[in-house]
Every structure is written in C-alpha cells, then in structure tokens.
Length: 150
Length: 215
Image 1 (spheres, rainbow over the protein chains, first blue to last red):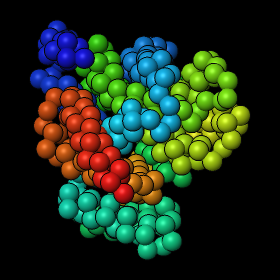
Image 2 (cartoon, one colour):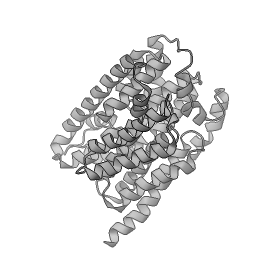
Image 3 (cartoon, rainbow over the protein chains, first blue to last red):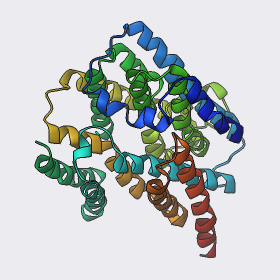
Image 4 (cartoon, rainbow over the protein chains, first blue to last red):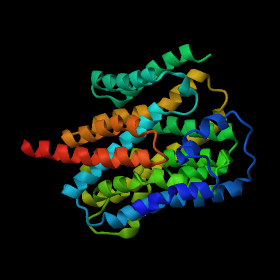
C-alpha cells in the first residue's frame, strides 16, 4: 500500500497533470460546466468509461470478495472493517458538504451544515422517517439558496 | 428517491459538460459508484491525462473494499458460490451497503442472493432512469433546486447512517469520519479519505468495542 501511494507524485508528474490529483478531480467539474463543451465520439467515451472507470472500481469489489471469504458475521475483524467502512462513508459525505462543487458553493458552509443537522432532527422528530429528514434538510437548503443565488 | 435525485444531478452534469449520454449510462450500469463517476467525468472533461484519472478513480474506489468485506457475510447463500457472490458484490455501493446492512440480516440464508440481485438491479435501473431524466432536464432547472439536488446525496446518506447506527462503534465511526475530514481535506487526492476512514474507523473500533464489551 505505502509503495503504491509513493508512486502518486511521479505518475501525476509524468501525466502532466495539475499540481495535485485533488485539484485534478475536485475542481474539475465546476468550471468545466460553464466552459466549452467536450467534443468526443460516444464509443471512445464508452471505452474510457470501461478502462478508466469500471476496471479501477470493480477490482476492489473482487479483491474484497477474495480477502473477505474467511470473514464471518460478528467476528472482531468484521467489526473493525465495518467501522472503517462507516468512517469512510462519513468522510465522503463530509467532503461533499465541506468542499462541494457546482451551484451549492454559493450557499455558505454554515447553512449546508445546518441543512444536514435539520435533516437529522427532522428524522427524529417525525417517527424516525428518512423521508421527513431529507425533506426538512432540503427545505432549509433550497430556502437559503433562493436567497444566495441570483 | 434519493438515488433518483443524485443521478438526476449526474445526468445534468453529463449534459452540462457535453459528455456522451451513452457513455454516461454505461458508467452508471458498470461503475455504479457515483463519486468514481463524477471523478471520471470531471477528469476527462478537464483534459487530465487518462492514467492520472484512472489513479484518482482507483483511490476513490478503495472504500468499496471494506464495504464489500463487511456486507459479504450477509450476501452468501448456505452454499458458497463465487459467481453469485461476485454478481452480488458488483452491486455494492453506498446505497446497497447502507440498505443491505439493514434489510439482509432479516432475509433467510437461501433468499439472500436473489434478494441482493433483485434489490441491486432495481437500484441500478432507478439510477439509469435518473441519469436520463437529468440529461434531458439539464439547464431548465432553476438555481436553488439545482443546489438542492447537489445536497441530496450527502443529506440522505447522513440520515440513513444515523438510522442504521447501533452501538458505540457505529456512532464513533460516523462521528470520526465527519470530524476528521475537514482536517485532512487539504491532502492530495484520496489520501484524505484514507486517513479519515481507516484512521477514524480504527479509532472508533478500538474505543467502541471496549465500551460495548463493558456492558
């Protein structure tokens, strides 16, 4: 793993990518959405999706099957892996809120966090209904967005 | 519902950057992990070299490994069948993991594989429909609603994780992932998620299991 990560800067440099991969990924979407449109043949794009998107993703699912064949429900390893998966998912969510892309950037971070908190409160207030929680959170954000967006 | 909204957002993104719809649909069917799809499209559109994009996708998808390992025990029939397990594993992404951990333990052993495959294909179908709708509607959605669509993924997953959290370990892991991310976010691609996820998760496991055993 550490050897793999050590390769990172070299690959990025070789590829002539922006200074960090984070910059290449996180910031790419928002400005591009307003720039000139991509000219790309549909089948080239499908090929890219399969080679650059599908294979790097699927490899982890299949590796996990092989690595996890001995892991039984309720074992200590199972609890650890589940905790890591939960924290990872929470981190993905947090990144979408703390460093979002697109129009939602115009809404201040405090409001985005308030919408999340409102969602959780709504969930508990209305008989543990996920739908109610999501509606409350969305209403907070959309109301704020009407104020902040032109 | 949340899936539909998230993928409407993805469809709108495809239209906005001019990425071919067919390829976008293929990405929903095959990649079936929204963060990886957004990174892929964003990278390609910005003209980043493909090996660098592949690396970014690889890093973002590492999180699927612990997800699959922790849900796999619930997706096995009484008899082991690697092909069936591989088909089930393909459907594991955020939604399948969260909902699977809630629904699958109640399903008897022999029903788990068909249940997973059915649920997974249903989710993918909804997401495909969302991608199409988003592509078709893009540009005609007013700003505040578009911002609302972007919140749908983090909001729905937060509420779903709160609903699923039992025991101290779950709550600690949830809190650690959320709290560590603002601190690690400055680090280069993917590394921040690894630290917040593996570090935060391990910490939550060590503290949480101790608390749970005391009772």
